[in-house]
Every structure is written in structure tokens, then in C-alpha cells.
Length: 315
Image 1 (cartoon, rainbow, N blue to C red):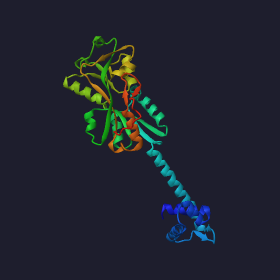
Image 2 (image 1 turned 90 degrees about the vertical axis):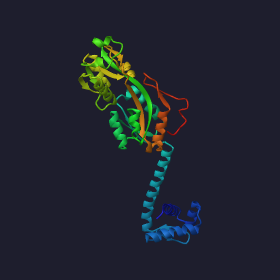
Image 3 (image 1 turned 45 degrees about the horizontal axis):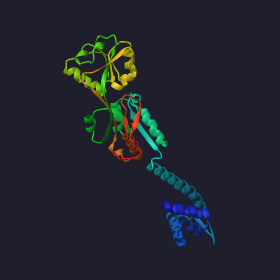
Image 4 (image 1 turned 45 degrees about the vertical axis):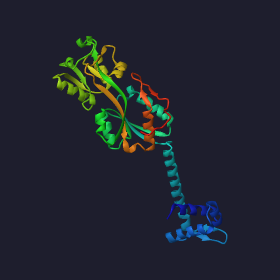
């Protein structure tokens, strides 16, 4: 049984006349009659009662018409939906963003993309970078923004990634702390100092730990967290020295703290990452191209578009 046979039968039932149906379908009458006959033969039951100048439906024909219209209707809806997807008029995007998304201007990017593509629906997952990458590799997310290194991402051969922002980490030092008078901090300055360490899963935590180990530095760890608001509150109360990227530090630094650069430069790099296998999927291709046409304005929540943003270029 072919979909075309169902369409032919529906038209015959609608017109009640094989000649009229054939004309509407741009078929010859013999061809249409043979197609309906073949359908009846395949089903093993008559669908039409043939009169001298018209046809009517048998009981089986009535039932067949109900189901045929449902199947053809669903097929047409599916075809229309796929055409919309191919034109990127609709679809779903499952995106992962880090805890600091608000400081990175990512919500601005999402709002602007949503305005450009109002038919696309979004699901956001907010996690640490390592967990976001695991979900991407498990095919639970379409794309993510994460803190990582180029070497780590290149090791994953099935990833497409693009660097979108890079900054240095700095320290938040309570203004009444002895180290607050320095112009910058060395790693050795942090020996025996009370610190808020970044979450153990973070790249920054691993980088700091390596530096501490290499220089024989043993700080006192008050707690481990990468939540900016928590770090801000702890340093504001003078309980510990905290860390943040330069732009976040300047936006959120308490009045009672000083921002000090680290002599040993530690970079925080944000990447947009998706799977190479998804690049040609219309909604993901569209979003990836949109990200590629934005650059960060350091120290602001805004993203600026290149003049040729409307030109779509495949990654």
C-alpha cells in the first residue's frame, strides 16, 4: 500500500466520480481506476461500489477513508514541520551554560538570538563546566558554554569549539588584610593564608593546586566554591581571600575589598562547544553561526555583532 494510493482514494471518495478525480489528480482515468483496483486487490476487499456514472463507498471503504485521511494528514503535517526545520522557522535547542552566565553576557546573546529566531524553543541547563561537557558528550545537550583549555578540547576529537572570551584571574583581598597593600600577589604570598578555593571540578582549581604544589605553598582552605555571590559575601566579611576573573571581580567586588592581580598569570577561557556531528543540523548550525558572529566586550554584559552578522557561514 502506497501513500499515493491513499491520496487517490481520498480524492475519489471526495468527488464520487473517478473521471472527475482523475482530472483533479492530473491522471488518466484508466490509470486511476487501475490504482484503486490494485489497492482493493492488495487489501482483499472492495472499497468502492461502482455505479454507471459515479461511485460510492462500501462499509470497508468508509473505514479505510477515515484512516487514510488521518495518515495522509499526519504525513503532510510532518512534511510541513520538516520544511520549517529546514528553514529554521522552528525547532528545539538544549543549551548548557555555566553558573557565571549572567556575568558573561550569555543571556544577552540568548535574548537577541530568540528575537531573531522566535520559532525556536530553548531548554537551559546551568551546571559547572565539567558536568556540561559530560552532558554534551552524552548527547543530552546540543551546545554548551564552558571554561576549558584548548588542549583539553582538542583531545576530544568529536568536538567543535570556538574561544569567545579570555581573561586573567585576580584575587579579592579584604581591605584590612595585610596583603591588601601589595600591588600584586605572588603564589608564595598565599602560603598559610585563608582562601576560598574554586570548586574542585573547575579548571582554575586544578591550575592553582599545581602552582601550590610546585612552590610548596600550603594555604588554609576555608571552603571550596565557584559561586560568585558566595565568594563575594565571604570576602566582604573579611573571612578569606577569594578569586574571580577580572571582569567579574570588577562588577561584583565588595567595597571592603581590593582587587589584586596575580603575578603568576592564570587565564580563564570561555569556549562555545558543540559536537561536530551536529553542525549540519539546522537549528544548531544557525545558533553556532550566530555565536561565531559575536565577540565579547571585556568588562561588560553586552555582546557586539560584527557588521556581517547576517551572513551565515558554516563552521
